[in-house]
Image (cartoon, rainbow, N blue to C red):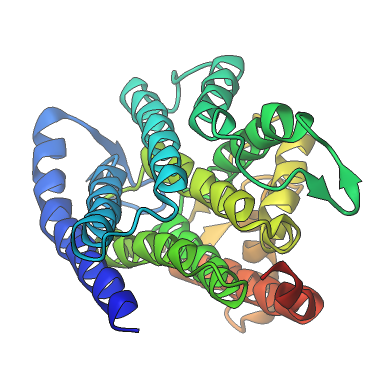
Length: 337
């Protein structure tokens, strides 16, 4: 118990303080460097610092490395070191890909094919260590699992986690909810180290959320959404609880179908009225954000919907999905220990 407290608490605190220190620093430097974007759901359309995920990723990586250092130097334990470094390598590569996308701008960015190819490439550190359990739903996939299914899973989660986005605090809060749920799943399945990994990102995201919530002082950028999406996939693969993780990802699966409906060209942004309220930008739904706006306009007496309410509604839906997931799959988690 003492080992767990020491190896968990201090790295989490380190990740917290690093993110807390570097986020405002990044905001100042990014604005000076012109790495900023318009907050399109505000009437003023003010410029906000972009790519704030840099601070989150830095805090997360340093926190995890400090966890490794405590276990190797103080407790002389090398358990799960290979998996941790493979995970760090993949997350860093994916974060770098996201940062390139941020620098090029969302109107230019990487092409869809190039982005998917690079995200699949980022799974190589996990592929080479033959990560995960190749048997799923009673089917033995053998070498197909690490060579094909693992890259597809990481690529898919990284790319689609970027779909539910564009509203102050949305990406960070969604990451907090899903990774907190996966931390609980990891703990229940006897993967304490993996629970720490998830919590390390949760702490950094929660710290970043203070600056990213409505009204945002910084945007997360693809560097954050790609990294968080990848970590969700990697954690489920390392912990062998893909089924419940996929269920937690239900909002993003729905969002993907809605985006495909619009030919991957329709955006999740809303139309801003003169009073700052939001309304549907299209006649059809092309994202959960649009559905949230539609429902909120129906149930609110004044019919006015604001950005923070859209975020709250989507988060509420995500919480409901997580609770249902635990109800459906929670009984089988003991079998994974």
